[in-house]
Length: 184
Image (cartoon, rainbow, N blue to C red; front, side, top):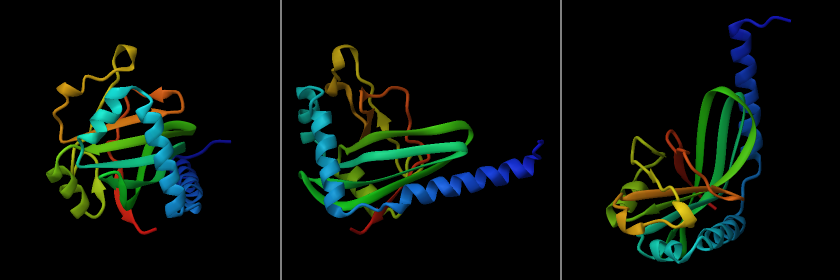
């Protein structure tokens, strides 16, 4: 059976809509999000003493315990998380992005975004629908040999860590992700 380009696009769009509705169908409660945030931060802190020390220097930490990405030609990803200020949940957010290209399957990852300055945090909070790479640049931090990070050399106002169940991940980006406030 031969598909035209238009039919392929239509099938891809329907698949992406199905994936998107599946990903958003289970909206988390505040309790669910807070539980996931705590577990995600515990995993992050277990990377070494540098992790907790680095987190203590932030103005705010946005944690997405699980961002699910799925695709079949068209792809999408969705996750819900919480912004912590002084260690307490302040607001809840979701992240959404879409992509096109060869992709098949699904994966889950956790994301921690740290706002290192009050100005960076305020710029994030006042923007409705904050877009990574447009409204603010997130420097993704790579972990060096032995699992350590030289936090003294990090000077970006917004830094991010991306990891899966195995640990911190390399060569990933958050570009194109849209982060919006939700009410829980």
